[in-house]
Length: 167
Image 1 (tube, rainbow, N blue to C red):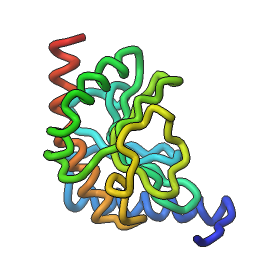
Image 2: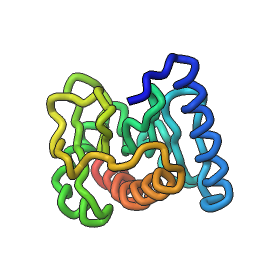
Image 3: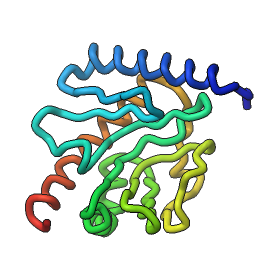
Image 4: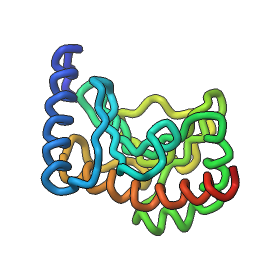
């Protein structure tokens, strides 16, 4: 593993997000990009649920991809998570690979997605942490973009239905 100092890893993240945004603008212009100089890069569509309810994002820290996940936050995050967890096998089938379900019992937010070998922020409640649910690529723009869109297209309608019918 390359040992990057803070400035180098920040530059790696900024450059990767710049390339990822360019890729989205060319290939997925219907998406809005949110990246406020933080460690995550999120996508959304204009008329879908707001990022404060569901955020599909890639997180880069220390010069490496840490996760690509669906981030649920707020008072209803655990309710939504629990309803999605019941559909775990179906969701994994739709996405095409195993997912890690991190309920994050000690926080308001939950995460569902793929994590890398560099990720250290998993809660003890995380389900399905095994080699098959780990990301097998790092900072590859096309793969990250396709995975973000796939998670978005699978999870946004499910979360929208839960929010509109159960909450």
